[in-house]
Image 1 (tube, rainbow, N blue to C red):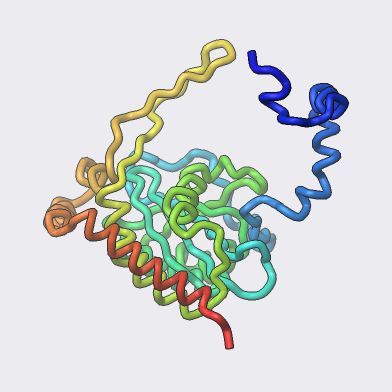
Image 2: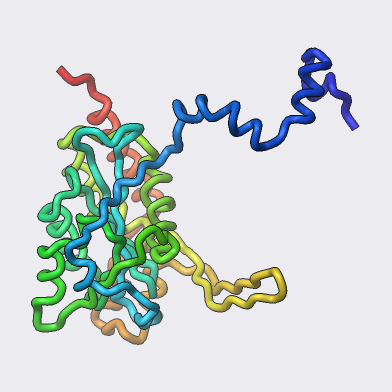
Length: 289
């Protein structure tokens, strides 16, 4: 076993003894003023839309999660370390059955801008939208989106999660990390000119790369034995593969997706994504006159 000198270096003996005897609560108390200056990376930007809570029900697992078309949605704030002022948000959506994802950038998160991007996402899906579930943010819980989903020939089931229960939207919370944060990080994107650049990326290479070439696993069974929870997952598959295997997708849609997949190269897509991201960051960090 290594000695104190190897672990603590040349610290005085009384300091070593104090470090060995200090409790976790005391450590938290001493570090509290330091942690205030170095807060966590993310910022919570969800403001509850209270007016429509009674009209938009809470999802209680009533969806058929084996059928494509039921989306979970969230917004990712590219605010850096400050929520002040205006900055870019990413509207992130994932289909629960297939894992198909779509992202769009908006300037701020006003109702009209978010609804316009959700409408564009709906047009780009390879299947009809059947259900839409979001958190309680005002960018989703508003009359514009409620009318958009309910006042149509075939209404879309519009539901929301419970307040302060992130696990209710576990599918999209995961995609917020893997499909947005891991690529864009926690930088502050406060240049409005970034929005069209991001949307050009999101609607082309980005969606093709993630939906055709990025596999994921799905939980198929969960069993609790004593104090342990045993989970079983299916084999890794891309959203494209899950769409192709779905009996609910028309054959002509599958044929078109198959033809499109044959023309794609993941290495070229990845390279194009990196070039576009470089332009985004250069524009965002360009000195302002």
